[in-house]
Image: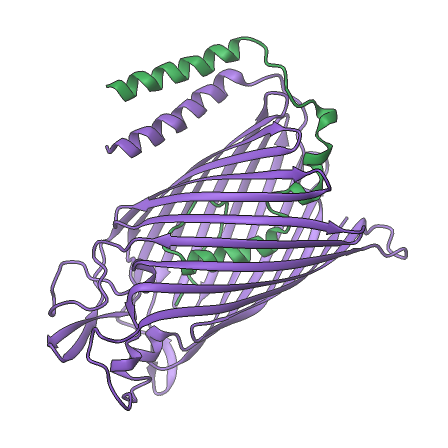
Length: 75
Length: 401
């Protein structure tokens, strides 16, 4: 019950914040560093997909890494 | 519902409700850049060698559509510890083809994709869709994704020395997943991303080949097929961050928490560093740590035959930890004769993985290898713990248009 109350309160807080206009605190002209290719979470999708497949096969955990594949390849 | 589940649900629902109320006026987003990559990879560890090529092409069509296609081949040569203690070495090939389409509409990007994977004893078809939306002056991106995968599981046997599917064995397995993600620009040098994904499996979930072992008496053992539940549901939540350093380099970190209905709890942590050198080189170093607890029905050796309703001896369902360290180098170039080529890259990456199992013993010391008993057999359950070491090499060429 207490958790549900907290959930409603936090949802209301976020919604009420949305009613006022929010100024982006990092302006577009301040995003040069973030736009640098070295800041991409995945610099080479083809390489990351392969590594994700290796980790999926060797680790019991799965998901929340952005991978998309199918198949087993795990024997 | 446990307290952990309630807290997680609260976080997700708060994000969803907040995103609905805070959407701003539409502005153009950005499609992924046009590129083509050709990769050669090789995984060598634990008696298994996998190598092959992968080709990925992504191309924009107009200002609102981007399509991509990937073709990937695994050539597997396996004499893994499971194979060594119970079967003969084998070779196999897995082919995976995928296509996807991104459609950009205002600040939203809609993605639909199809993956087809084909190997002699496992066929998989996956359909997925994602929606992402930029808001707060493009400081925040929220995403939702759904994926469904239908799998056909077969078992290979040798008939007249020819490998064929066992005509008496054909099973199916279905997987569904739903994920939500949030990417947030924190400062002009720091970006954060969080993701939550729930995955459910239903159907035939064990290996058709693997066995469990059990004591027939204190000094002897025998095997029987694994027995798994027909369903599995998992939750994974991850947070990652990347920070731009003042001298043009970047550090990043990732943490993922995982649990599932089989009792596995996993923690994954990763740290990375990217360092450009002069104008043409980019170097990268990375370390990943993984640890997990075992599934409720896992045991290295069971006390007797048919000891429990569910029994597993898949080492990836045991208790273990792994460390992977990797280094990568990228060399960027341009070719004056090809003005359509904006940039080319040569990439080399090497990773070294060690996996230390806490409750999976090296049964080759008691069973022997490929039917040949060991010269001085260990008593079952007293063999040394197993450790896996793997070398992973990737070489790939990238072209940007």
